[in-house]
Image 1 (tube, rainbow, N blue to C red):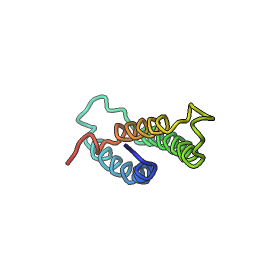
Image 2 (spheres, rainbow, N blue to C red; image 1 turned 30 degrees about the horizontal axis):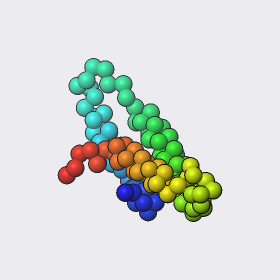
Image 3 (cartoon, one colour; image 1 turned 90 degrees about the vertical axis):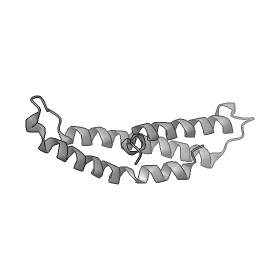
Image 4 (cartoon, one colour; image 1 turned 30 degrees about the vertical axis):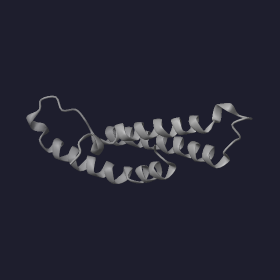
Length: 106
């Protein structure tokens, strides 16, 4: 089960992972003359990744605030501990699936 600490650590790695991806993209682009219809640009990819990063960071801050407030499940049944854990698990799965390094281990 993912914790806020685990999610925070994963979010801090996004910039370095994005830089590694840019290097790989630049390498691919250097061979684009071999492809007749290579129309991708790094700025489009960078914009997409920045949007994802901002969204993940916003969701993480929301989870942090939920954790810090720790409402009483009796007074707020929607925010029970198990539902908070499900939110954390879902965010963790989303981050893992969005991480190209986690899909190609080694």
